[in-house]
Image 1 (spheres, rainbow, N blue to C red):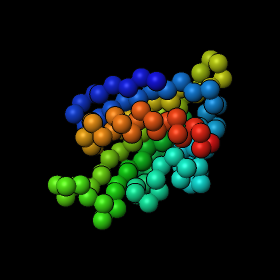
Image 2 (cartoon, rainbow, N blue to C red):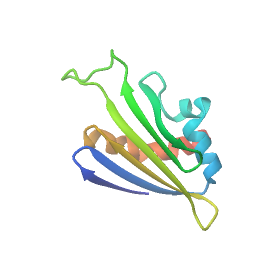
Image 3 (cartoon, one colour):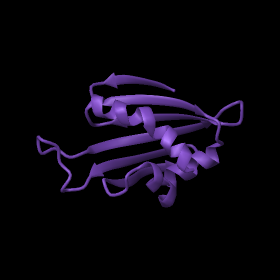
Image 4 (cartoon, rainbow, N blue to C red):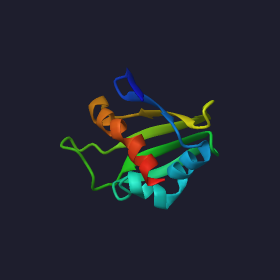
Amino acid sequence: MTSQTKSDDVIVSEYDLEERPQKVWRALTEPDLVAQWLVPDDVDCRVLEAEPERFLRCSWRSRDDERDGFGQGLDTVVTFELSPTDAGGTHLRIVHAGFATVALQAANDNGAMLMMRAA
């Protein structure tokens, strides 16, 4: 896993997973599986663009009653890029933009591993 900050509100994380792209895609798109690695009540997810088993871009927004101490809610765009590896697994690149780097770093450090355990 690698993770780097590209700007003040964008983090790019990359993972080489043993699972095939089909399984990773399921973990990203099937509601029952997504609910196991993403707290479903905290985020309103809307698909903006999708190319099965290759690319998924979503807006993630917090519920109206979920605000931080400054009255701000989550309003981000997350992009998942999947590509097959030579070993038969998946290279997963996650680009998450639109909120404070510190909070995102903590989420990205564990998010992909939790997602794969769910699948």
